[in-house]
Amino acid sequence: MKIGFIGLGIMGKPMSKNLLKAGYSLIVYNRSTVPVQELVELGASPASSPKEVAEQCQVVITMLPNSPEVKEVVLGTNGVLEGALPGTILIDTSSIAPEASREIAARLSEKGVRMLDAPVSGGEPKAIDGTLAFMVGGKEDNFDTCLPIFKAMGSSAVLCGDIGAGNVTKLANQTIVAVNIAAISEALALATKAGVNPERVYQAIRGGLAGSTVLDAKAPMIFKRSFDPGFRIDLHIKDLNNVLDTGHALGAALPLNASVMEMMQFLKNNGLKHADHSALVQFYEKLNGIQVKVLS
Image (cartoon, rainbow, N blue to C red; front, top):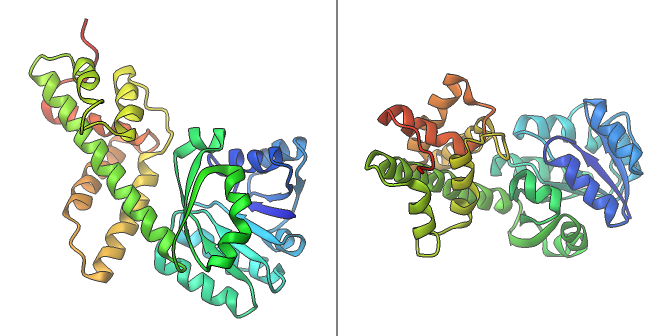
């Protein structure tokens, strides 16, 4: 099977590499040519536009920043829709608004092109080691067809419902992650303010009910003062914007999302938009006049 991949950024490039490792023939496109060349050196073939990718592939995967970029690449001039043949499957692994996924799928279906919305969780580390979690929306037969592709890039793929359900699930995921990081930051700030070693607090609670994957991933980063992005503040802001917009459209009250959004906006406005979202701790540090760090 020949697969197209559009969007070779922090997530798309390692995902593409794992498809090559799995033996798939890959056609790649990216606005910046540097990652394209890197993939070509590993065996991929380059394309000059999303249209050219779609003309050659049975499955096209997109990994792009947000809804406008996905619409442009798929529906715009020289986009996927112009080149795709009936029966082609678009797998959009971007994290976008659920309604945008439904809009794109409706346009594609007019030409007989199928779609799955399949955002991921796990960030760059899991993209690199091929253990991403895919949250998928779409028809079951399309999901079954693409399951081996998901398994080449991830450790799990769950069909959550029809088109848009994947991104609704991703919004729920991002809600839990954002609120969890904020709670971790608040708790470690409390320990520090009380003069208790926050690293000892982490070790004591990680095996109990407060333990989580987020705690184990982010607390060590905080202690090391290592805020290089696995997932950037500005990207999480984008996701929380989609959460709040979707919630407002549904009449759903989401006060915790709104609170964490304000914290992240504060950090963005203070020069931390490209920092990892674990930098939320710095909001609490500024608020309390302390620094969370391991005590001797």
